[in-house]
Length: 169
Image 1 (cartoon, rainbow, N blue to C red):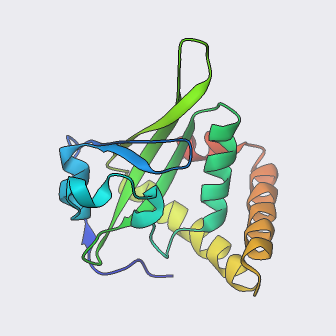
Image 2 (cartoon, rainbow, N blue to C red; image 1 turned 60 degrees about the vertical axis):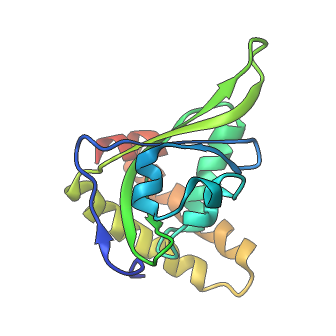
């Protein structure tokens, strides 16, 4: 699936930072996040992070991301986001749980940088396959489950887990 609108590109010095509560609602967004997404701070705070989800992004990848986070693990992922005005931009995301002094997860923190063009080209191929699998199912949950299974099979075939795969691109 083609991402929305025109592609926006980050520079190597750009850094997107956001924080969310445990439900994925945005509690913090840095200035560059606002600039590239076309949202104002008032528009974005309290909104689900999925407000910037591109239709070209497989839901199964977000399931994997949330599974990692809920297990207390960090995750790296290539993500295509959409802007308020209908454009899109690719990022290489690093998302981590934030913990209190007792070690309980209290929120999530994400840093996103400009991805390597070659890596985006590779990940797009995989995402197209995963999106097609999700689309084959009328029931969204069944589609995500089928695409998740397909992703896990592809990783097993390569002999790597998701983190190894993403970091090797």
